[in-house]
Image (cartoon, rainbow, N blue to C red; front, side, top):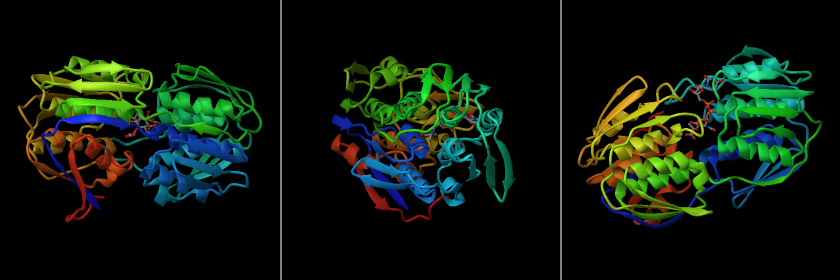
Length: 423
Ligand code: EPZ
C-alpha cells in the first residue's frame, strides 16, 4: 500500500483541470444496464471506484472497455443478476445496479454493502421504495435477493433526501408500468446528470433537481453517448487546498453553480473567488479567518467537503464550529488532524475547531476518500514533511492527486508504505 510524502509551506499557483464526477459516473455506468446496446460514457475519471464499477458490469455480462477517458459498455446480451461480495464490499455504490436490474430483468442478487468509516450506510430507503413498486426481498449468506415480476409506478416519499436511494429508485421507475412520484428527492447535480442521460435514453422524467420527481415508465431504452459533469467535490477540494496554502489557482471545468455555498464560505474565510463560465479562480493571500458551517443535502454545504474544510479551519484565525448533519460519524479523522497539532473537540454532530498558528508534520493515515484529502490539505500547509499512509482510500476518488498538486508547485511524492496497510 502506498503513502504520500508531503512537505508543507509552498503556496499553490497555476491551473488544474477537474475530472468527471465520480458520484455521477458510477450511476451513469449502472444506468447503461437498461439499454440493449453500446453506451459510451465520456469524461469518466480513471479512479479505483470506476474500475470497480466497470468490473461489476463485466460480471453482470455487460462488457465495459476503456477508450481513454471514455467507457464503452455493451449491455446487448442477456445479463447475469448477481454482484459478488468482494466487489460490493470494496464499493457500496455497487448497490445502485439494483434499480436497473429490477427494471430490465425483474430480479437481482446483490451482496449487502458493509458500513464504512463514515457511518452505517443503510439502504432501507432504497428497499422501501422498491417495495412500494412491487419488489419483494429475501436474504441469504449476506446477499439480498430482489424479485419484481412487474414493477409498477408508486408514490414514494423519502424520509431523508438520500442521493443513492433517489438514484436507485429513479433507475427502476423509468422502466416501471405507470407513474412514480418521488417526494423529498435528493437534488444533487449528479442526480440531474443521471436524469439527463436517462431522458436521452428515452425515459420520461420531470422535476430532476427539485424535491419532487415524476417519472412515467417506458418500455425499452436506447444506448446513448453521454459526458459526465465535472466533479464539484474535486473542484472544491482544490479550492480549499489553495486557501490553506495561500496562492492563486484556476480550476478548469469547475462549475461555480455547483459550488455556490462552498465558494461563499471560502470568501468568508478571506479568499478572493472569480467565477467564469468554465472555470473558477481562487486566490488567498492571508491566513484564513474562522467560519461556521453546517453540512446539508444539496444545495446545502456538501458533507464531502466537510473534512477538507476542517483541515483548513484547523489553522485559521479564531474558533470555528462545524456541524455534520448527513453522516452519523464523519469526524473519525479529527484524531489524525489533532496529531498534527490541531485543537479540535467533537461532541456528537458538532466540532469546535480552535485555530492554531500552524499545524506540524506527523505520520498520519487516510481513513476514507475525503478524510484522506483533508490530511493532504493539512500536510500542504503544515510545518515539515508529513507521511500519509493508506493513500489507496484517496485513489478511490481522486485521479493522480499528487501529480496535479505537484503541477501547482506542491512538494508531494508517492512512496511504497513501510507499514502494514490498515484494512
Ligand atoms: C452519496 O452516498 C455519495 N456517494 C457520498 O459520497 C455522499 O457523501 C452522499 O451521497 C451524500 O451526499 C456516491 O454517490 C457514490 P445518502 P449515498 O444515501 O448515496 C442515510 C464520497 O466521498 N441513509 O445520501 O450513500 C445514510 O446513512 C462519498 O464521494 C439511510 O439512512 O448517501 C446517510 O446518513 C462519501 N438509509 C445519509 O442517509 C438509506 O437507505 C445520506 O446518505 C440511504 C441513506
